[in-house]
Length: 108
View 1 (spheres, rainbow, N blue to C red):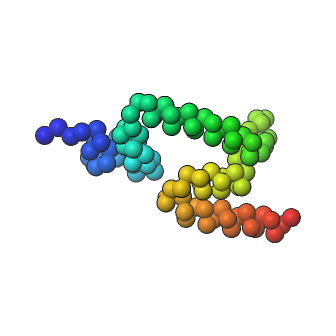
View 2: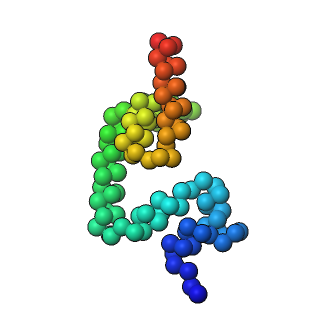
View 3: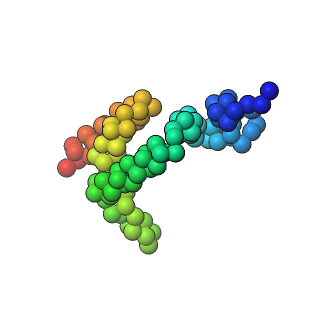
């Protein structure tokens, strides 16, 4: 019986490229969630992400790394992004970010 793309992503065969991606840390459930959306909803989601990117630039800091100027999201910006995403998987990281923010405020 032929497996659906969703089945292949959620239960990849051992040794497959999909299993390698999962083991590397790629969240395949997000891909499945996007595949379940209609094309219109996918476009809407991408447009919302683009609007979010402009907001991210406002809460980022310019750093010089080697000879390159790069924009890096501030701790407050990262906390805000993760809070607004509302994902359960971000909760452990948020605890660490709160502690980092508190530690950086103590240094000031």
